[in-house]
Image: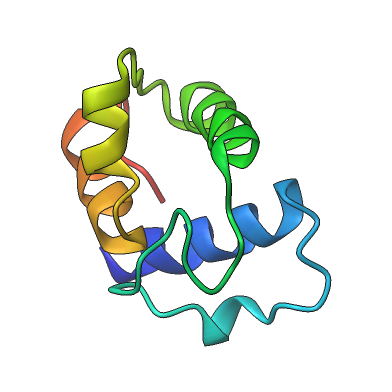
Length: 88
C-alpha cells in the first residue's frame, strides 16, 4: 500500500501540474479536495481519468467520489481494493 501511496503522490503532482509541490510532502491523511493542495472539481475529473486509465478503476458517481477523494489514503485504499490488476 505504501508503494501505491507514493506512486499516487507523484502522479497527482504530474497530472495537476503542481510544480511547487514535492510529492513527498503530501500528507496521505490530509484533506485531498479543497485542502492545502488547492485541488478542485476540475482536478478531480483529471484524477478520475488517470485512475481509470492507469488502474482500471471506475469512480462513477459523485457520492463515491466524495468518499474516495477524501484523502490520498482513501484513494489508495479504493484503488488497491478495486484495481483490475494489482497496482505497483
